Image (cartoon, rainbow over all chains, first blue to last red):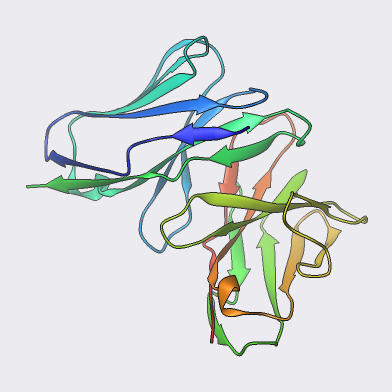
Length: 112
Length: 114
């Protein structure tokens, strides 16, 4: 079966660092994505990992371990505008045309 | 990345009626998808909209309930037929260009069925 797990909610302080974890079990794997979604808005693309390791993009970094079925999104120097839901998604080529399978999202609240 | 617009942005409908949601992309995309996001839930793929042919539906979704059209590479429609309160959800259109990893989303259509 397909399963993607991530924490439901997290709280962090402005200026701090927060790590949002994601574990997955899917029938196929062709990349892991992180999206940011503000309330009432469309998800926006943050990062893509297909090989093991860390990908850094400004204040955001994403890590992948395929052997462990594990990824995390690291947000540094948190800002109030980072309060949003963060969605972990896996592209599964297991007979599904490379569709994205999403976790339920982690709602991050950044406090002053 | 491409910009996707959806119409309507929201609607309140009566049970038993149908609603058609339009999705317009500002550039040609290889693949278009329709997702549903129920309150507090993840995005669930309804179907892949194929240009000039029938959409490919995921398990649990059928063409009679969610007919989809895609007449060209920039436009698609999703109809939610014979609606019930259980269809209340946000419906999102998504697009991806072949050979590129990013998959982008429209702003969603918030549907409430009374």
